[in-house]
Every structure is written in C-alpha cells, then in structure tokens.
Amino acid sequence: MAENKIFAGPRVRRIRNGLQLTQTAMAEALGISPSYLNLIERNQRPLTVQLLLKLSSVYKVDLDELQGENGGGLAQLREVFADPLLAGELPGDQELIEITEAAPNASGGIVKLYRAYREQASRLKDLADLLAGQGHMAALSGTRLPIDEVREAFEARPNHFGPIEEAMEAFHAALSPGDDLAGGLKAWLKKEHGLVVRTLPVHAMPNLRRRFDRHSMRLFISERLSPFDQTREIAMEVASIACHEAIDAELEQFRFSTAEARRIGRFELARYAAHALMMPYQAFLAAAQRAKYDIDLLRSRFQVSFEQAANRLTMLQRPGAAGIPFFLMEIDNAGHRLRRAGALGFPGARFGGACPKLNIHAAFAVPGQVLVDRVEMPEGSEYLVVSRTLDGPQAGFQERVRRTALLIGCDAGFAEEVVYGASRMPPIPVGAACRLCERQGCLARAEPPVTRPLGLDEMATGLSVFDFQ
Image (cartoon, rainbow, N blue to C red):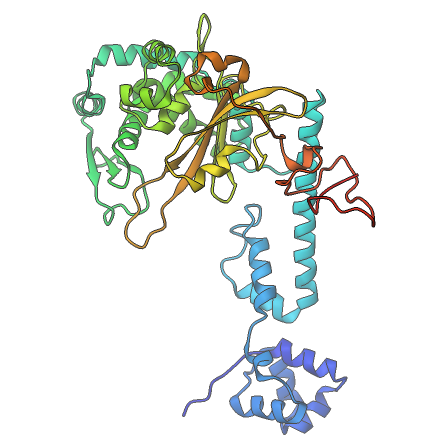
C-alpha cells in the first residue's frame, strides 16, 4: 500500500523547540539521521506514516496536530487578504498556509494589525462625519478604492444632471414610442445602428445582465431580469449611444483620478440617462404631483419598477420646475450600504442613515410591504421615511434570492404634499449612527459613541452594554 506523505516541517520544528531538543537528539529517538530530520523541518522531505506513529509514541504528540492545518489562523489570514486593498496579492492559499504553519505568532500579529487598522479607519470616518455635521471639514488621508471615490462624488452633489435630462427628453419626444418603450428602443437600435436585441437564457449567459457583441452587432439581455430591468438595460445602451456627448461632458466635471473610477462614473451616468428616458422629466413631475408622490401609482403609470420610480423622484430638481427634494439609500440584509443619492445630495451629516431603528431594517421581515415612519433626529429635525424591499434578478432552484431594501425620505415639512404623510404618527427618535448618537437608554444601540466615555459605575447598569456616562 502506498504511503501517505505529509509535509509538516514547521510543526515538527515547533514540537522539537518546545521540548528543548536538538536535531541530533530528536533524530536519534526517531531512528533517522539528523540531516534527514533537517530536510523534514525544511519541508524538503515528507512525514511518512511510520514517522508519524513514531512521533506519537515517543513524544505523545497528537496526530491531529501534525496532520491538520491551523484552521483558525488560516481563516483569519484569509479575512485579511480578502480586503479590497490586498485582494489579488496572492494567487492562492498556499502562501497563507506556509505563513500560518511556519510563523503562527507572526500570523496572529498580522491579523491584530489588520483589525486595529479597520477599527481606526472606522473611528476616523465617524469623527469626520461628526466634524462635518458641525460645519468642519476633516482632511483625512487614506487609500480609497475607485468605487469609493465615485460614491462620494455622486452622494455629495444633487442627483440632477440638466444636460442629460434635456437630451433624453428630446430623444423621447422624437422617438414617440407610445406605450411600448422597449419595442421603440429596439426598433431604433436596429434601424439606426443595425443592432439587434436578444434575450438569452440563464445557461447561455449565467453571470451577466447585459453584453454587447460588437462583432455580431447584438445586445444580449439576461432572462433573469424583470421586464422593467430589461427595459432599463436597453435604455442604457441607447443612452450611451444617443447621449454620449452629454454624458462625457458631465463625466469631465467630476475629474476622477483613475480610469476605473471614470468607467464606474460613466456607468452611473448612463443609468441616470436611462431613467430620464424611461420617465421623461415634465411628464413624470406632473404625474408625481397629481399622485402626491405615490410610488406604486407612478410605477404603474410609467411601467417601471418601484426602485426605478423611487430613484427618479430624487432627480426632480430642474430650476423653475423642481419637485420635493427626496433622498434615498439602499442596503442589503447584512446592513452593507449599496448606494445613496439625494435631490440636494445625500444628507449624511444630518440624517446619516445608519440608525438600527430606521424602518429600512424592518422591511426585510415583511418583503414587498411599504413601511412609513416619521423620525426625529437628536437636534430636533424630522423626516418622513418610506421603506420597501427590492427583489434582485430571478433566482433559480437552490439559488438564494437576492433581496435588498430601499429607503426614500424627505423633510417632514413636505408631509402634507406626500401621500405617505397623511397619517399623524408620533416621530420615532433616531440618530445618524450609533457612534455619533448620544441618546441614552437606547435599546437598539449597537456601538458606543465616540464622544462619551463608556460605562456607568459598579452600582448601576444601563439597558445597553454600550451605555455611557
């Protein structure tokens, strides 16, 4: 029977050092030469089954210690190198295994440094948000990914691009698609550019929403997408062709620092243009005002999704013809922020959006149901917030459904003009984020504030483990 070979040199060396033995002494006890043991410790020779049994009988070594990987340490190192800043540095796990086995203490040190870095980065961001809310700008230097640069740029400015709006409104009027926008866009692409749109099944395009084949002049759309999202993908392609000058001009205004950031920014502007094409400005604003900004009525009127109609409401800021200044944010069920936007820029300093008591988190418990709340910030400002879950692309059997939640809100002063503000509900006290909130006795608090010392005293315990003085 063939022998099973295990390379475990660093582990053998740790055992020998722990017993304070020389290579000569251990080799003699195992019945091998010192030079052979040296090769084993340098992973140039394997541990055979016979040697494993010998180690176990002579030194009472647990065989699992020699045969198993340092699973905990390896998992922690994987977490470190999965960070976007380090992703792609290693081709596989082999180097991580070698580090974990050869230098477990150094491996643990790397993990501690990484966690300290993440903690400090989080604290600096919280302090920057706190200073920004007080009218101070904090010049915090740090490495930003292209997606972070694009998000910050779009979130900080009004979600309205006048030249793109005008170009798409003129294009829609010239196209005159009637009630079949998707059909009109497909006909325009084929007539003007010889481009044919086809919907492909999942097995033919399992990982893409849309793909443009320049050789065959065909635009492929995944059947996973809802009819509304399929129309948006087609509209994005049309906008990229018919509105490229306006998109390029707006893109130049951002002055993104990398080519990847420019590519992401162009995609965001193309999606903006697609919404402007699917819901022309004047027609959508008039319908929104008549319906008192009822998103479900608007989605039915313009044959779009809830997310598309809500997104469009944040864009209505044309000078002389502006709607209510809405803002929105989208998260997944783990709380990760996917995007934020606002008619006047997302109100990060005033509203924040990271409070656990916001109804966007409760929306996951009642998928598809619209939740409405009036919330009050610590300084007294109030907002009307509406939340609902969104379903992602169609999942197949044994695939987990992708579901996110969207919150759209406005200042409570506009409540009388919005259908959701009809009920007189008492405001719910919330904060911008736990680390920036000083509300005491909050049952939902998830983190201590950075502005107060943590803990009460030995004689009193608060409702939360993060209660403060």
